[in-house]
Image (cartoon, rainbow over all chains, first blue to last red; front, side):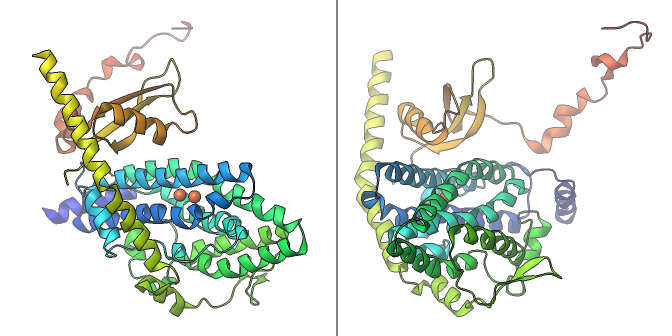
Length: 314
Length: 93
Ligand SMILES: [Fe+2]
Ligand SMILES: [Fe+2]
């Protein structure tokens, strides 16, 4: 029986039909999705912290409203994704607790600090740029609610990358100090952005199953390659050098070759030892704890209003 | 802590079109659900009207019963205009 259901399920996926919340699905499919979607949601939420850091110090009002709108979008992305995860039978508070306790992971990129204004540009250009590479194929993910959430997310992301690029473009036309700030920032963000696509294909044991289920459409290395190819051309417009002496065009492959990624650094940050892991989790927990009374008061208020209404009716 | 109830959000993008399901969110009551829906789902003028419905009030058909529910329509081809044989001379019908 079980076997039969799994075959029907896979056949549906092979026909490019979507899976919806109440459809039968293998436990492992459900688990994989809950993990992936909730990690994705956590990344959107934690991702607000490094950028929020610069809102009060944005150099102009134009930059400030753009940055606020972007950070607000990221909160929305977190919400769409938590909602998608909830259709699989988990509740949001449970997911928050996994994040706050450090049990759940989020994208390691957000464990790096935003030290200069140029970093806000680099985050938009490279971090949102890499995120878009990852997210566009997810719009075709086999799980309906996730795919639909990603369509909304992707629509909103393109302004994020453009506003970042514009910040950097302005710096690239500025004083020597501004140009130096730009280069220094790109030097710090390039490699962590490259790591956003996850371990090399050989070290990513779940990729094959996820591709079979059409949760994933491309491997980590495929996406990373696309990113390098695009970013290299964009870097020329900014007159910056990517901090990888091995990047060069490979005529045969039709792609840019690139240098070796420092996977020790990657795993070290995943394990909690990046420059900002502790700070990020502390900020998240503080917000959650300090919001406790607000959540309770809002519930109490709603209850009181509902009671008053029902009394009137009676 | 009790979790805030879940609400389903429906948005009419412009007059003349139906409300369409866009997603869900948590809120303590309909007023908060409405405000949150505005902030989350219409930040770029995606809508001119919002419906919020608490999720627990929606009953959904069971996909496992899909066959018995929707099959009866399959063998009723006479409900479609193409079922009827009319001469080619007859235009615009
Ligand atoms: Fe986002
Ligand atoms: Fe973004």
